[in-house]
Image (tube, rainbow, N blue to C red):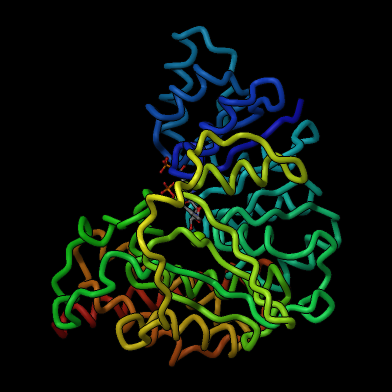
Length: 394
Ligand code: NDP
Ligand code: MG
């Protein structure tokens, strides 16, 4: 029986993880669940899965959850605050940590799990984008098993040989990172200024949290995934190609030197990569229906349009620039997406805000995680004030 902590249990990935766990009560038990403030969701999860701990970052929400669980006769202990996210990630009794907090807030608890040598299922791509080399060094130092849960990286992982050590040694020519292009793939460019958060969050194939849905609409998500792939597979930029594939059936591919291409396919449903990571190296059921090839739509592939999706190009430039550019890119994007979701910034200004932060960035390579957090905060402050002037200028 393996014990699992789910960071971000109240979210979309958290919910899909619980769906898979529900199918395997004989293999996994839930040790801890965490959320920011969603009391109702966490209460329901605690009553069904009876974890030992529930952590809420928000202290008022934690007090509320504690009262409700006591009244319901639950034995789950409720903890509060950021530090306890780390306690339940690195706890001696934990075998597996699902890292599915959204955004930079996931960095510290994910890294705590890595440093404690856990099997870490990485959905929170922002933590790796922010801290790149330091994160991968921590994986190597602790011997943590880092399994890519993001569907594209999971597809690449499945398409690489089992004993993969490097792109060159595996005879790989390129990693082909697919992306749907999101809901605005063919919206007239001049219409992008007026699109609403509801439209941006209506992804044609995937049902996800709001932040990653907006990232998919700008293709910043593919940019973050490009950086994520460079770190996970130790790949050079010239070894990764982004391919637009609107149907989201081919989740990514590996092209080998002999002309072979190995692809991983499946329904656009995160329960598949989650079950793959949970069970690895075995295969376990996920509850996802098989693909029906006889009734499938045509599968199409195209090059990305960098004019329509400037955020994709900015992410590639940030990785190439090195230093703390990727940290700044991620922080500026989080501020911009938040402002867009609150109706304070037009959709087509997300890329403008990120570009402005990048053009004015001067902090160097971080030596430690505190440097990463400083870079994140500096970029956020700059982005906040730039957003105000961008909005005034409209
Ligand atoms: P959601 O918005 O659905 O869920 C986010 C989770 O993080 C919630 O549990 C939320 O708690 C918690 N959270 C939010 N802010 C904080 C904070 N400051 N501190 C601690 N916890 C916090 O996101 P998703 O599940 O869609 O995405 C999670 C991660 O997985 C992201 O990094 C995303 O890029 C990645 N991912 C998601 C995919 C998907 O299909 N959804 C696919 C591939 C990767 P509360 O509910 O209380 O706010
Ligand atoms: Mg993905």
